[in-house]
Length: 398
Image (cartoon, rainbow, N blue to C red; front, side, top):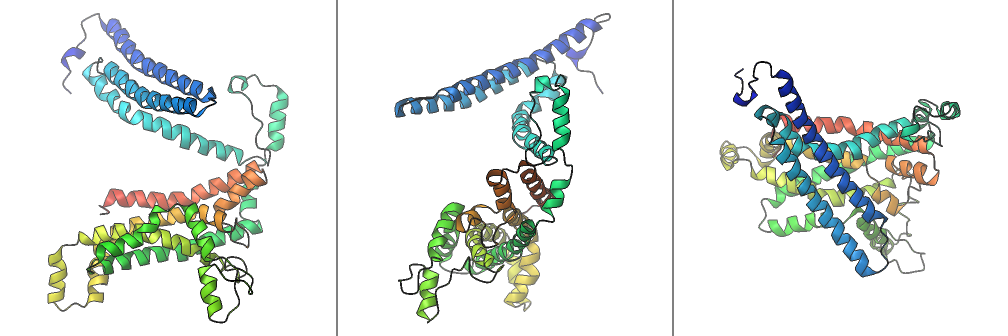
């Protein structure tokens, strides 16, 4: 390896070079940390400021935006300027961290550390581990560790997760959401993408199918609550589904409550299909338009029928996209929460893993079991996510 010109060391000047190099590195690390600390202190001051009037609140909000955006820019400029003062070797080594460092720090603080903390809490009973300030961790009295060992139950919460009847029901319901919700959303999205691609009204049709994506989960739940609304048989039915049902001489039904369980979950799953079909359609439509026209025309000249073109040419050609969309929708389905909470609150055996976590954490105040449910949900999602990332790495999805 060729030595860099300014990295040559004079005879007898090794210690001087060593002190200078590490001094520069130390400054390059300390100054950004100090700048970041100042930014944090500024945000804490803004957080503790309690404005009374609307004008004061608006001012504080604008100052927070300017402080955050401007502070991030200043932090980058200072860090980059200091790094560029180093030798070319250290610039090459440290400069990438200027760009990935903030994102890595944010992911570590808001994702990795809470995950490990949840794992730690899941090993204790409903009261969780006894909190102790970090500065007293090595000087805490023996009573703290005695209380800690009393609350520690090991894998007891995980045994409860896989043995309690409500959790078994939640796992079953999540499986139903995947089998019917994710599968049908992907199938309908693919069919709409193929059929709309051959229609003169392609833009209008796709806009109507995609429109529900602009609605939040909570908003969709409220809309479909009106759709499923049930009234006494003597009263007018304001719910569309019951209005049609009663018009054919039937009695009004509480679709999400009184229908034979667990099939009442299907009426909740329909909402997700309604929302996610548009997402799948847009991605599949882009992939289909990437299929060369010459390939399709050659197949038709050879006598291939439309179903053969669909199954033997289109599907294999966009298989990477299908896998990517499928894994994305499955991950979304495993984490489903909003629709169930708005529609039924988890009653009538409609709860899923996420609603059970919410109940244990905020209703039953069982910190240990809630953390165990969260870890189980994370472990369930990880294999699908890894498979998705591998697909991105191995081939282009679009």
